[in-house]
Image (cartoon, rainbow, N blue to C red; front, side, top):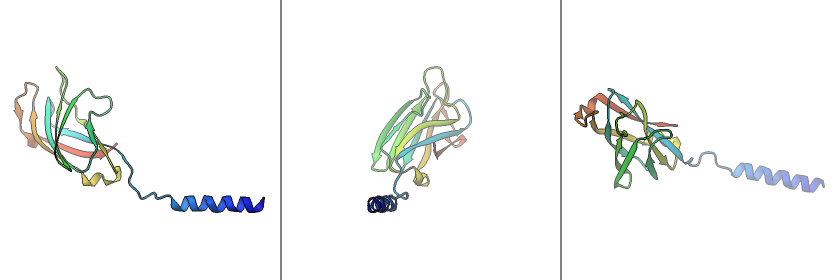
Length: 131
């Protein structure tokens, strides 16, 4: 009986020693919008490895991704009819490792106001953050 308990203890130690907490942790990052209010649509370039891009939980935005290269994508986010984009999360990005958030960049390309007239894109900023 003691031998069996000792064997189980060794197996438990080996299993604990083999777990690698430094490996990738897949999950979602958020692209957050800040700046002048009243944006109806935002076009941005997203750089970094990802598996999917969509609307954040609870948002009714329409998200249109277009892959340019293996790690570069153009994304257009549009508010629903009669609405504008809120400050905060506008897109959800599924990534292979959420701990590498620093490897992601979102750059504003164009912004449309409530009447779809182009706005000054320098009045808006995007950041990629962990959920």
